[in-house]
Amino acid sequence: MDDEGRQVPRAAEMRGRARGFVAQVTSRNRLPLDFSVASLRVVDFLIEGLRKGGRERSEIAGALFGLGAYVGEVLVRRAGAMWIDLDKEQREFFGQSVGVRMPDGRVWNPLGKVVNCLERGGMDGSESSLQIFYLTLPGRVGHAA
Image (tube, rainbow, N blue to C red):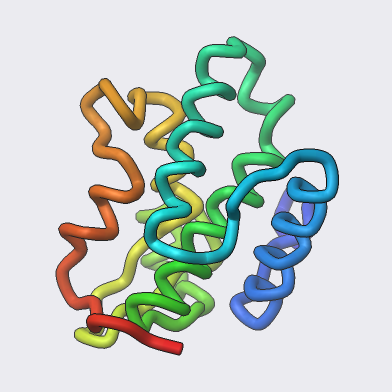
């Protein structure tokens, strides 16, 4: 738990959280969320819909977390990354307790990346789409199981 009493996610939980998010979202909608690189385009559209909906960030925090977990899990499955618990310095920098480490050692913050796409406009704003982010991501392997 953090200082405000909220549950802090751990790296060991993130695969399950991503799967749970997909199960919840796809039970109501027929969305092609299959952890593929191409599915990141669907995530871009979902974030754009949330942004245009104009709701307060606190109202959509659960959806943003789920989308960030999904993006991170795509990096794990397709780019050879692994979920990690961030150290104190990284937590302060990223504002998150978990991230992913790429095969070359770089650390990325998929939870924060989703928030940035929401706040800055992922498809037409200053923040690139998540699919483009993946395709230009340094340190990824061609394909991982």
